Image (cartoon, rainbow, N blue to C red):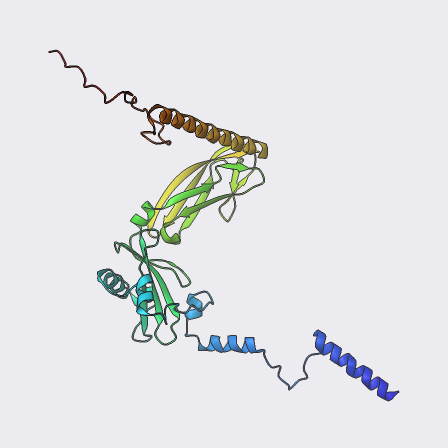
Length: 310
């Protein structure tokens, strides 16, 4: 009987261990971490100071660290006048703004060959020893402004944002807001550089604005949205009209828009068929909606105009 009890106790203990229901380890006996946890802890200890803080607790390694010269030159600038201007501009700024200090922490720079939104050139800084990213920046192609993209407070660190603001577009979507939905107010900036917004509704009985700058429809109607934006050191404002409609009205507008596009397409196709049947091919193409000159006569060239009488 004692042998049977011992076998039952042993089997129950094995079941608990296999199903994860075993009791905690006794005091004085440390629980060993798993291999994945140990590897993560070792990577965190091996990471340079501040790298996790700058990249949002994510360590980014140089993807072109082991690439050959041809691959590196395909994606990055390694020499030339543009490379010298970009690197000199970044290295000439205050160390407290860029977070780069070659004396205490040697680094190297990667300058992208392609422009971002045809205006910014992205520059990344990597630690020479660990080859991990320690900084990411945008430099305007005309050196008018420099932006830091990493760190606790990303933003412009040098220059003026006048040209960036000129290329910025205000997006208030949708223009016809359905009851029960939410609207979005944002800026489309070159390179998606950071900005601040202050959104107000001129008639909160129709549309209100919450703490996340979302548009909340209250009742059917129309109102204007006032937006005050700041990009870098430049401020500007703009307005947009919003219509609050029902779901049925929105479907009717979509159907009318579809019929309008269908009618225009049929009109262009018939017009194109007429000109092809008249003289073989359209002179201005199927997407020309303006006035067309008359077709030439079918027999030979057009005769010269009659002489003018003085």
